[in-house]
Image (cartoon, rainbow, N blue to C red; front, side, top):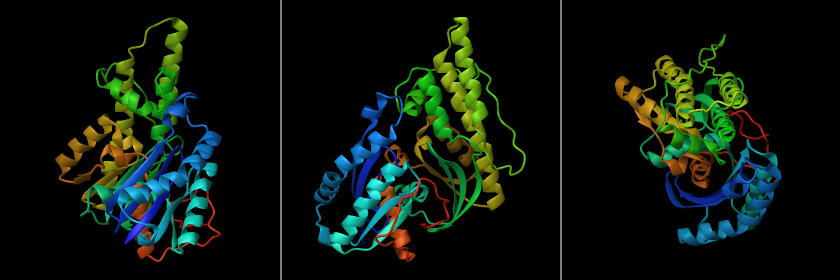
Length: 338
């Protein structure tokens, strides 16, 4: 079964063709990174306009690259939530038009479910149940993946997402957008023990996380140094910050593994590309005898392939949408569509 998949929730326009949920025939991406770098972050209005300019030609490119025609497509899947509302609307409206024109079923896909499903592409033998840590620019949560379309949230951030904190600190240090990758590269030559950064202790759910205090502490450290005319050891601050984030994520994830009894851990989302976090999880899962699924870097960020993968399993579960499908800026992981 071949699915034409559309992703436009932020600043990447992506159209892919995925077969049977695990085989990527093509994954075409039009990146807006260079444009938004001028502003130090994503400008929603610009993102929406660029999606409109790129999406039709990108869809044609996806079919051509895959060596198929519209008649070979069995369904159209699209990210409908969550994301920048204007950006998501572009993808949803295109997908509705494509499904109508080709007389194919329309399958709505939750963006975070898509990130989790990227692991099905990277690891074709992976099947639920397993534990997944989703860490991206807009989301940080621990999910018990009980089935392909059945999810239980075990813990989440109560404030900022881990990826947003990486980008904010990187920007203050003068690094280009997207800052997470630049900060990670800089951290490689730093001393992670040079700067002491706080770890927030929360009441209630022990699997919940908080990153706002860590972000504020790093920002204050940078501002105080500037006001005093002191020089910051940038590589070491980057290394210290990466370590602090990892020390929030890793222990909670290991506790979730213990509580659920899962023997497989998957990581999903853009922050999964961070070398410190990847390294710590590799070490700890090997120690515990837990299988670790880490998607390649190209599947960590936003892409159409992950939407096609999850779209396949949503289709098998009977999920369909009509021409009244809308886009949503926020939506719980376990809700199909509004």
